[in-house]
Image 1 (spheres, rainbow, N blue to C red):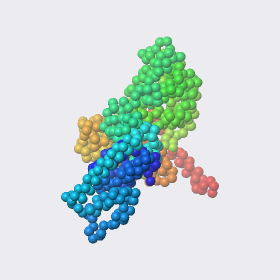
Image 2: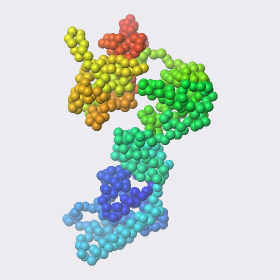
Image 3: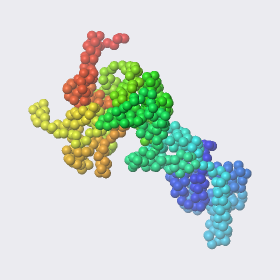
Image 4: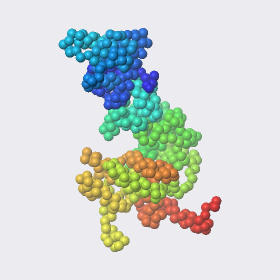
Length: 638
């Protein structure tokens, strides 16, 4: 049953006019009613046409036009999905009586003349040269003209325009509206917000709505933007890979609102030019707090990952200071700093959004949710560093965060709770090996490189073929072999050489050869990312995944592996992330005895062996085995 809350729009009338005029049914459907469903779905088509006619008739009756109500129920446009005409009438069976025919097609309320005309249309055998046939055709033409005039009158009387606050069920087919509502998109406003905020693939949030239906809904929303006052950006009409960065940059306009730092407009009275704790003379040319933050971030431009982390914390502080505290950043007191740390622990919902929403999106927010103690501790450390920098540059006279007690974080072994077991790793390998698609092979490549090298996500994303170096070495048998070192610039812009198993390089070489790209040492491949999409490199794309893209790719593999396991194993894999592979590399290598502390330290990029010792569980395992032996292998309650 269709919702009584559905409204009639211009598309319904245009479609029915096309039907009356005998135009192609499927083409008319795709043109005017594509959001109702597929033109090939006869059931949907029949029920939609029947609903439209019934709504037309009901509207005419409300206007005290019973004749018009009967007229719009007539099918005058030839065969339709709700009244299909047989290819050929059976000759062996006599036609039904007029009474039987009328009951079969539901024309009991029509005049006898109309009933006879329809009966003759279906079963008459007179030729067009017959005067009676000509009379019938003339009468039918008059009825079609009357019906078209009736549709024009009805459209003026009952057709409505969509408004932004309307429910989706008022304008879309019940099944489509149901999928949208399950995804939390209850109104046209929320739907437009989602489309503009995510772009082409906005529909992934709503199971049951695929790419085709999503594109049709987007087009419908764009068509009715004048009445809803909900414009759909051009970026939402094309795939992300085809979108111009400049186009995306225009989606969110500069504002004094919850927008990224680069779009944030600080009111003049809160910009810090007259901050309470500004020093008289500064080594910075910055005249306000925003410019001071920019100068601080510029000192980290050679460390893009560090710069992103610093920007995130400064961004949150500046937004909170202006939007929530109503102060300039250079006017913050120690009490303000304490209030900000409490805010990070329990931020309002409007400050939070999923992490996958990118900075160009109007749905972006500075937080995902409440920050745990380690994240708050890091935020305080970074912000204290910001104010120390500003003090050293004589921009400010004090550091409000220096008097704030840092959150207490329990000291736990490095990687504790974030290391995969051998069985969990085996499940990941198995799932990755099963996917033979091009994307699946690329995910498997990333999975094995992360685990076998212990690289950080950003380090692997930045790795190029030109960073690989072939070196001669002597193996355990005394034979000379060729090994591989990946030259990495890690934290603090420190260089280290990470040993890469030759099996990984060999596998990568085979992939390159399959795509006609030579070897990793070829000059043409020097700038090719280790994780590049080799199928797209022909268009000049040498880049691999971004850290965010790699994170999502690995989460997909981990979720698939979780589906193959039960209980705690499944829960652990669902919670795992790319960084777990780095911890697992160190833990598995050290505890198996296959990797020494010295080698693990070099691959992981840790400054101290003491850090690596926290991965070792051998002493713990020995202790458990000895106590179990002492107790006779019995459980305490036994």
